[in-house]
Image (cartoon, rainbow, N blue to C red; front, side, top):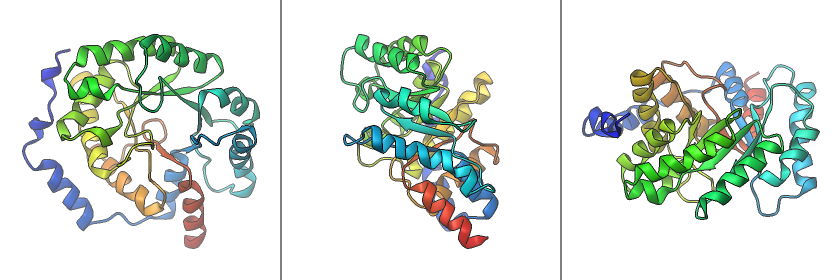
Amino acid sequence: MAYDIFSIDNHGAGFVDSKLAQYKANPMIPTLELLKKVHSCIDLTSLSNADNERSISALVDIVNNHPALHPDIPNVAGICVYPKFVSLAKELCKVPGVDIVSVAGAFPHAQTFREIKVREVDLAAAAGADEIDVVITAGDIIEKDFDAAIDELLAMREVCANRKMKVILETGVYKRDSDIYDAAIVAMEAGADFVKTSTGKCEPAATPRAALIMALAVSDYYKETGKRVGIKPAGGIRTSQDAMQYCAIMDDIFDGDYNSTNFRLGATSLAKNVIADIAALS
């Protein structure tokens, strides 16, 4: 499909700014139902250079213990770890319906040889990852070398064909709204199941502006192709009110038609804060 079918300019000058102003003027109020939905969409994440078997085991324990401690709150959607911890997380996770997510593809910067990226994705899949979050080469998008970006993503897509592939755009490195939009289109053209804002290793990480632009790209792509791709804001989302900003976008652009199959929030501390807020409202 020709790239020029899709353009952020089709939405008109000032469209993104007007939408963001609308959300700010009418902030979404957390309800019990919405907070439970948010919790069910979280990819509980640990991506620290200090990660070790003990810390990953403790992360998985949170998920395993959740049904007994909070039977009225749906569990998180996934546990996101580095590739070397995939097999451990897979072995330890005892609750159904929670996916093991691995970052790969030379996370977080994607600046290495294609063969290494593809091999890492392949190894993560072989270790048992249900979903793999790979990183697009942002420099290709900035230089508008879309063919190079899509070819590399297709190579990674091929070796994780039976897994969900989320493509991290690293939206914080782009200076133009059009770059974020174009990166999302390229990712979807390469077969992404989700587009994801950030690695969490670059500032700014997730922002409502970036998520809105991605949502517009996903909506445009769906209208043209019939394929609905998921959206994953990640990085710096800590409070329920942070999460509400992204729920507002999903409500507006997709008429509230979202759940863990097409919406995720990559976070570390968000889950415990949502649980505390649910308790306060109960």
